[in-house]
Image 1 (spheres, rainbow, N blue to C red):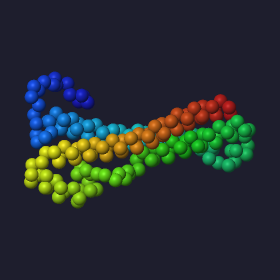
Image 2 (cartoon, rainbow, N blue to C red):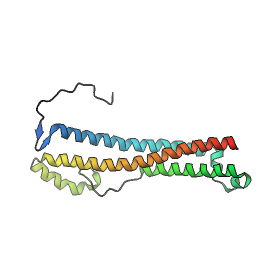
Image 3 (tube, rainbow, N blue to C red):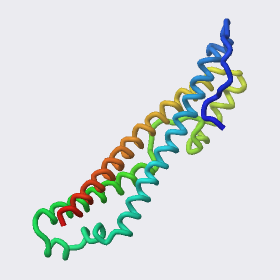
Length: 180
């Protein structure tokens, strides 16, 4: 199944309006929520891949494991010691950054779509349902999109750090193999 719907879109001459919200805008903000939610999951997957690679790299390479031992630094010259220290720092930085991606986020605002604040939002949803207030739903989707956007920005910031740390680790490792 494709990620994109290949069905041609029909042109709507008069947009359907529900309450004060045009149906096209309502559908669009729902799609934004879906995309942002997928991006949250993808950022976690990217962090897991980086973490797994780094962990395998540390476990399988004695050269990498040894950069964390004091004895290594006593036996080598300054170039190898410098590269070893940089490798230890880069790999640690990458692993910690990947872990920071998957840590729970504490956001000060929420919507009815977040299970953690459901007790607060349930009565508001019930009141809106009694009044058939479609604007409430639109506003909840907008608020949730804002929250998901913030979460995505935070997560992808650490994904980029983890990826840069991974690249630095590989480059430094190659330099260490050449130097040593």
